[in-house]
Image (cartoon, rainbow, N blue to C red):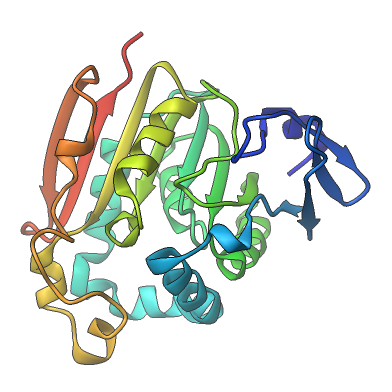
Length: 257
């Protein structure tokens, strides 16, 4: 993330502006300091990463460097390129849009969007530093500029109304607080912005091979249900689609202008 983009960031716990001082971002009011590691700001208070968020942070840190290989090898189990293509078709991006992906992982979704001629100013955040390091490496190899930050999707470290498009693919099923994460996506979206949320359904989890299913929570309808009830009533153009024989849900809606 280049210096000119730091102005979009805020302390996710206070909402205060941040100033860059050497290899840190510092809260201009409280003096709280956040490290910048390998050009990736880490806007996390580790003591606040608890429960499922901590569990999956550690799991994804561990699996980061083989994640892309696993996805390539196992992609036929969840629809592979067909699902990725469907997602790219659903997410609408205009040239010049500022786009945020929460839980960016290794950057595969953004690459897929670019491969389908969706060109924007891309930002990515993830709770796993391991995944972000891999994403940084991938983005260099792909020649795609992705500004990265380590943060919790339930405490997004950007100022209000920054983004034209906000999306999340995979992971929200396991968040401590899904509703808070959705409200944060709405907060950082501009009036009129488009928001997309997708993840696996219980139908997909029931079909996972044994060595993969250990990575997930036990299949139950509440955990893997599309979180439609958590979307505020004032949002417009709310839609829910099921991809690849009902194994992936894809919610889309728009913040009122």
